[in-house]
Amino acid sequence: MMSTRSVPSSESIIQVALPRVIETINLPYLIIRKFPALRMEILKAHMKETPEQYVKKSITLAIYASVGLDVLVFFLFSKFNVDLILLLPILILLFIFSVLFMLQAPKGFIRKREREINKDVLFAGRYLLVKIQSGVPLFNALIDASRGYGVCAKYFKEIVDDINIGVPIEDALERARELNCSEKFKLILSELVTSLKTGADIVPSLTEVLTQITDEQILEIKAYNKKLNAIMMMYLIMATVMPSLGMTMFTVISGFVSFRMTPMFIFLVVFSLSLVQLFFLSIFKSIRPMVNL
Image (tube, rainbow, N blue to C red):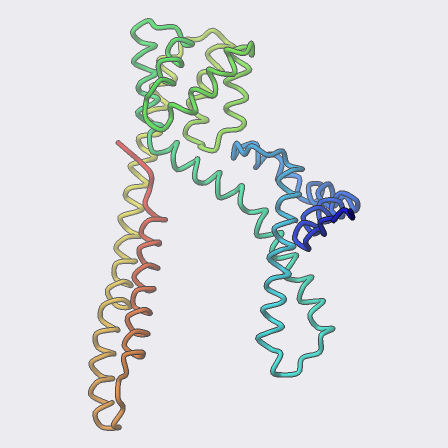
């Protein structure tokens, strides 16, 4: 009786061959060497992959994306008898742009962590100050802060976990300061590190830092108010006045030229207005300062 062998699919061949090709040309090492800041960005973003693993994954995804987009370009312009040799430089450009786009992901995670920390950093600092003023040791204050004070609790827990595995408290705070995404949180950690190294009283300096952070957040709110007024004016013009006047004038003119508004035309208009609304909503959300006073 003859044995049947399973023929590997093209997808499985690609999944096995791509990592081997990438490792052969050592492309991840070249990219990390070209972008030295990427290693620190991955550490600040607290991503689970190592820089080499993340770059290798980004290259693989970029290959799939560039090939898919290149095939799409071929089908879009096939009716124009485009020379197939032109698809090769397009594929290379798409691959380069895809890799560069993938490498920006850590910066997005860093901005997200920064906004999370800035939202509660003032209250977290005040919580530490009250604990220290009441005579609680710094390590115990960090443990209490890591057990449930807002969004910053998980960042305090990272410091406590490092201390629990044997890292000295000064080194754990120093490492947290270097890898932290928030400049405001860095100020608080800097005062803690300075106090531990010099033996100075932490209460006056920490109080001054918290006052500085409060003033900065008040300035951010005032700046947000000014930006909001300008964007609201643009919103009223582009998303309210112009569409209503434009549709009114178009309805009047279409009556003279005997233009019939089809359901598809109305759907396109509503869809376009929805995109404009979503665009302004994203702007309002992006410029909003993450502060709690």
